Image (cartoon, helix red, strand yellow):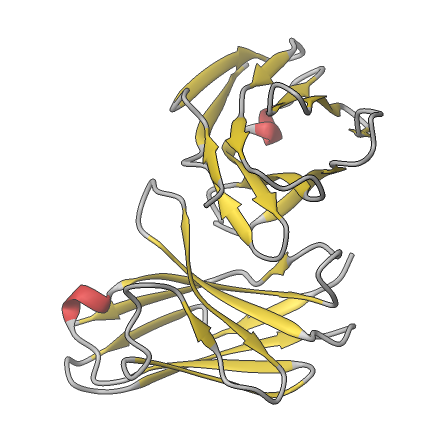
Length: 115
Length: 111
């Protein structure tokens, strides 16, 4: 199956700093990538959808200035959590697909802890 | 808006036995996809099975099969010959352009 690499797997940062998470499709071109947030024992909540070369579409309630998404190529999307605060601590997961009829393949996730 | 309901938060099955995980969804669309994803303790999301709504035949992947009832908007997952490695959280999901997940069900397998 298709492979999606997400890096880093774990990050600990101080409050007020920014953190960048990368999501790469290794063996296919991803026209669309998605970013999710997951709290312990809960489901995945979609944060935003990004298409290569265009601005990301954010879900209601997600601050676009807090969570910056860049999808500069068909194999790379990044999520930057700006001025992180302890309430941003969570598990962030990316996924990628080739077209609307295709399966979403998931990265292994990033555990963010903001002190 | 589409919704996906998994009403059972937890289930347990004896190793080698069969278990069925329930899922219902609500949509006004006619063309969509349904998925079951597995999330083990590593938290890596793994695709278990996919069903295309326009196909009447139930999808099957080795020990995993679904019972897709389009009119009833029901999409249950059957796991046969359960193995210890099947223990995980299972999410039912609906897709027509983006995924909508259910709350998930935690499956434990008793040796």
